[in-house]
Length: 481
Image (tube, rainbow, N blue to C red; front, side):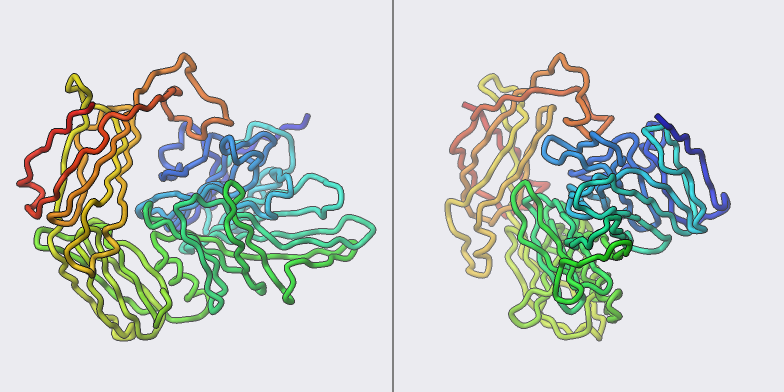
């Protein structure tokens, strides 16, 4: 079997503003591995990183599984996140909808200098730094399918990863090809599209990450997500997502996939790609005590939601939206909502003051008074006093899953609103297994595998929220039963 050893390529070493293409190793893990709930990268995967985003392409070899559900992901995009407030939530982006087995072809700098060629499972060490870098994979021969070449290209200063697929008909007869990708995003995502900018988007507001796909010369059509099967994204050229390729011919599909911290950022990039001008609108949310974090800020155009996001820890959300008039709604759990009108062209800064929230703190203990790791859920037993806050009366959960005892729990709620708390504790028990296989983990730094059992310890505990500032609230001890 042929093997290929790849060495460093720095083009040139003095570049301070550049993009990187590296293979993940133990030595560079802390520098290049992204952060987030859905990070799936392991040693041997490829990182494309610039000043704005980080992308992970799974090592294009046989047997590269992301987890027990996503198998044979070699050559797929596994992780994608912004560098500022990194929070990867992408499970996978499969070029060609996962129908093609992709293998390494070559890595290239912006000067089109190839690093390595097709080979076996050789010991590759790749490090390229240039104004743009690209990784190319090629499919294995398969009956009734054309060959597929996929190139991931990242340039300095760009907020997107350029993905190019070239389908080549190596047969003696014409072949029909479906122009489609498969996107795997977990159940907490909302999804939708915008025909005006040819955008398909996904947004998980709970974990602060959104994704967008924009295609060149093709209309993007987003399918409805199917549990454990992701959603299919199709690309239509002449009102058809299937093309017929003559013997010896090729067909090229180009699209841009990119992350954002919220849907507002994703739509702003799509606007810019479509040649539309964005205008900055700043929304600051606070209550009587402090800035309000995780307040929902929604831009409406008539009855349609244009885009939405959540305030960071300082309570200020900087938004860039297309020209026009918007109704902006600001809402925070336990604080109610406020609404105001804006004209985006005026690039205004708005400050919203919401009522002070109630606050609940407590401890979860067993019958002996020992602290327990736990998952707690809170459900309203009485309605809020103001109808404007009706939506915040919906069930709210605070989930904790850890191998260490949780010292306290805390959450905001309506002042005077009573709640029913249901607690499930987790007993953790180390296993004799000291490691997990590639099928079971994607994090080399994860602790040894643990088996967990759960038991109900605190059912029907009732709390009443107080409107006092957090610092003055006495700790409420919650005894388990």
